[in-house]
Length: 189
Image (cartoon, rainbow, N blue to C red):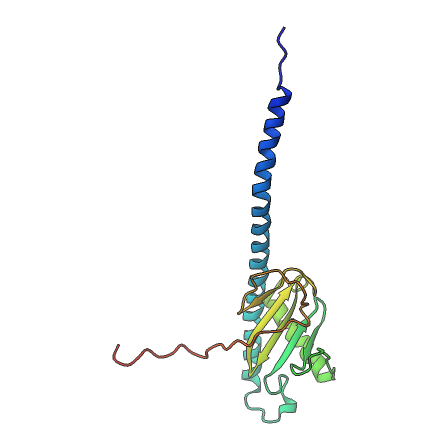
């Protein structure tokens, strides 16, 4: 009578082949997962960037005839806004500590600004973000699932590597100059 099944040697060879394939594929999968997570948070930052630019332009339009800086919600048009998944804070861009002086007008602005962005950005309860605005133009956005997330995304300068030490709150936003309009073509072309 013949016995059916695999020999011990055949099983060892199959396991060795599987181990070699796993050793090759696992690092590739890890790299692919890292890249896709970074792309996802960079895309989230882009959505927040576009939504916040729309809101900032609404404020610019609404406040263009107000000459008193104290009566403007955005003031000089320069601020940093931080959303922590439940509350928004308008921060002074010059204050490195990220401290915020809350006045009734600031509290109303925080609620209004974050409410408008979060209507356009539906995952606001899952993401934290920081927006840098200068002269009524959004200059940069950084976003992540939590403040000290390993995967932080940003826009217009996209993140390409893990976040090893920064949090969203203390993220150093690179100064990015966004041209107001496309340059005119050279004469005679």
